[in-house]
Amino acid sequence: MAGIYIHIPFCRQKCYYCDFYKTVNTSLQSDFISALKIEAKVRKNYLNEETIETIYFGGGTPSVLSAKEIDEILAVLNAEFNVDSDAEITFEANPDDLSNDYLIAIKQVGINRLSIGIQAFQNRHLKKMNRRHNATQAVEAIEIAAKTGFSNLSADLIYGLPDLTPKEWEESLNQLFNLPVKHLSAYHLTYHEGTAFYTWLKKGTLKELKEAESVDQFNTLVDLSLANGFEHYEISNLAKDQLYSRHNTAYWMGDKYLGLGPSAHSFDGVSRRWNDSSVEAYIKAQANNQPYFEEEKLSENDRYNEYILTRIRTKWGVSQKDLKQRFGNEKERYFSSQLAKYKDTGVLLINNNTITLTRKGLFVSDEIMADLIII
Ligand code: SF4
Image 1 (tube, rainbow, N blue to C red):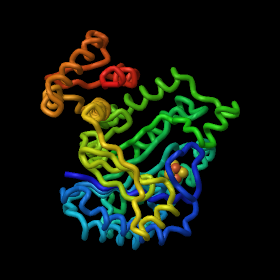
Image 2 (image 1 turned 30 degrees about the vertical axis):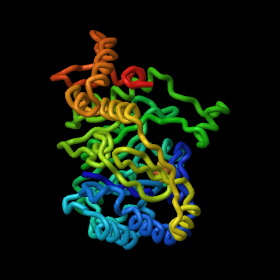
Image 3 (image 1 turned 120 degrees about the horizontal axis):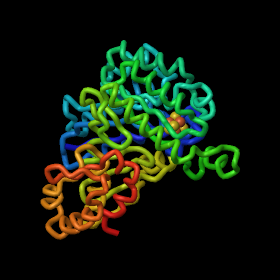
Image 4 (image 1 turned 120 degrees about the vertical axis):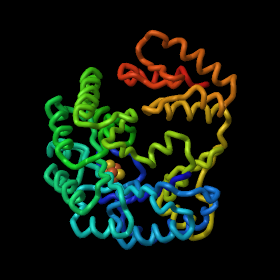
């Protein structure tokens, strides 16, 4: 079982908080699609003919692509890889791209899960972030998507925004729960170096929310989500009716994946590869059949650390039995001894030899993870 991630590096405009690799030069789109097809063909053996159970179009803004372009990409993937007929095919989209016609067209070419970048339901915050859409468009996009037959709908929200009041955050969550959304990814704002938000924070023209306010917003997120039938299955992800993101869950479970496109990461079980971040250089490299990635072989300690860091974030947690089977007695003993520090602290739940974080533990997860890994 494996997945394919496709990085679509185009955005119509740049959001002020975002540090993903992207360009607003959409004139390169057609050359990029050609390069992507070459890369998919060249790397067709990367996953060793494993069945592809998930495909994820991320970005950037995949919804800058036409349905025809998406169809062409999927046709190459279907021809070169063993794509399961029931594969989850997720597509990240901006609300203002989601017209009725577009939604019908992308559904027809095979997209069966949408992840819509809502971020907030207040126009003042959307403007401050330089999002292209407004709150009305956000609501409409979700409603039209559901009417078009997308039953597996996910939305992204950001909390911890400068100035975001508790009332506004509750409003955003309640608005979302009134819509036919089955999955929510909610991220706390991070001030990434190089972004406009980071510059303004350093200049003092933008004020970071106090930690206690962020903690309150996280608690509101979890409480309201649970009250509305969502399950908190990963630190930043909540799902209804067990409609977890299969693609992201596979990352957390350590499954293999192939990443296509500039800045995309790949993992084949023993090493990681990441493509460089320049669409121009990517197009040139594919056309000339030149390598365009860096690679790191993972040591056993690296693999143990990744296993702990990803699993502990999820509701499935770390199974000591599985840990022992994968990494042997010594690593399992190390894990158990580190775990002992947290006895009776209320931050970890141990059930059937499986360790998960409690709500209290989620707030100190960085500290716990640093203790459990091997440095
Ligand atoms: S948040 Fe999304 S739409 Fe905005 S700049 Fe980043 S990738 Fe583009």
